[in-house]
Amino acid sequence: MMAAALPRALCRLGRRCPAGLARPRPAWHGGARRERGGTGTSTDTKSAGRRWARPGGAALGFLGAFSLSPRDDEEEDGEDAIILLLKKAKLSVMKGELGEAERLLHQALRLAHQADNRRAVIYTYSLMANVAFMQGQLDNAEKLYKATMSSMLAGDTKEDDNAILEMSLKLASIYAAQKQDPKGTDNQAASIEGKNGLLERHKLALAGYEFCILTLEEKIAKEKDLPEDVLPAEEKANTRLLLGMSLDSYARYLLDINQLSVAQKMYEKALQISNDVQGETHPQTVVLMNDLATVLDAQGHYDEAYSHVKRAAELAKVTQHPEEHMVLNNLAAILMHKKDFLQAKQVYKEALKQAEQKGDADSVRHIQEELAELAKRRKGSK
Image 1 (cartoon, rainbow, N blue to C red):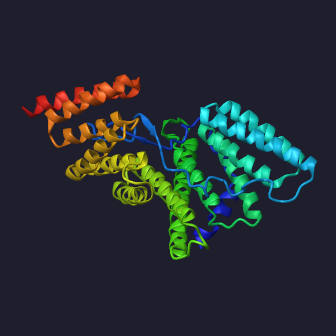
Image 2: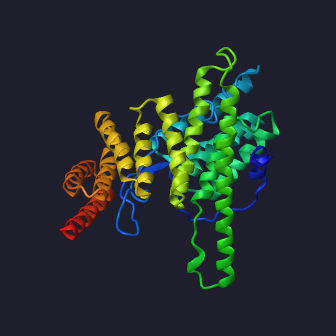
């Protein structure tokens, strides 16, 4: 079965990712989307951070504490040093100091190798992969994820373990981000090779996303009726959140390649999970309402899109969502498509005001462009 074999197959792939690519964006995009006849809701402009609650069992926490087995004092001192470096590295990541995190992780890796601590080596590799992923170093991240997965699968980790599935999801995101356009080359052979490589990455992205989603759906169905003493509710929720992350990431890729109806289905499922597990007022739920409106608007379903984005804007205001101006920008774009030009102008102005207050120069520029487009449409409608 393809799904069952995919993690090992991905680990065996030797293809290197091209350098200099746009970094993977675990983000939503809240501005207006350029369409054939004008503008619309966006997946192309200023991005806001994704806020899926981190699935505790999936966030490569599979190793737990390194000190579960008995050790002598010398081993404990060495392991404590590794753990301290890893904690410092995680703190650096939280501060956005990725270069410092990378330096600390290399130190931790060296100590882990010296101590022959296999679990510490695997865990450090997983953190290094995450840092490389965040830095946009896709070639390095891909190799590190594959190395980590290979080591885990060589041990007693199952292929449907949440840690394996999360790394498979990140590999799919890497392949989805690799969109070099070969048509600008003068060399016909290079152009053909580039197009073949693009198709290969597209297939890998689709296979990766589908593997994660199908495996997680099967896992959730299998674990659904397990009692609390066998599988805690928190673990079940973690798996559902990881499925939500997978659906969300897949939907954004489908939207990017213009498979709008399928993207809509993925967004609807992701929104349902976020609403069920995290609640309607959670920042991620608001984001997904906005994203679902985006794909509905792109298909011309303006009334349905308006219903979702209006609710997203209401929740963004109540919860003081940090990207409220982006949600408002989408609301204004959908109002413009509904030909409610007066209301669209008012919402655009509020979005512009908030973007200026937050110092979001990209959104300010984009909203100003949208206001100019709105003026054209109002003039053309008279």
